[in-house]
Image (cartoon, rainbow, N blue to C red; front, top):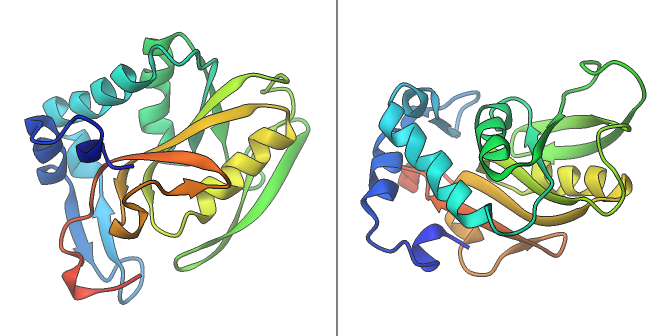
Length: 192
């Protein structure tokens, strides 16, 4: 569900977030309108709005771990985890974690990839939130859910700053709800 459908209709913070995201046409390949959050991070007010909205949503859901998807989930996940009293678990690209890992392969809108997670990071029955910057096809989030569930966690919800309009309404990933703050800018030139 999009934030505007969940009590934040007309909230000026959402417009500030949307305005702070730069669009890079045809990156990383032709036809992709890349939603660059670097400019959002350069705007401390808009960046704080992102964290505050997510913290307000999750602070009373008894979430014990926030899993951030490499790399941009690492930016939003830790401040949210700290604010709600949860641990942060990085979901990494292959070969980046020491020790024993489990992995899950997935498809991106422009290729294939794999995520890994330390087997010691998650305890059975922990309540988890998965965070990333953008959802396009749902492949990365679905792989994240699979990893966490294989380790015994209960994924409560997935959260993204930006989501394609096809995820509007009551979309679920692997049966899990999705919460998105804003739609991408300038999508009329391309389809995913």
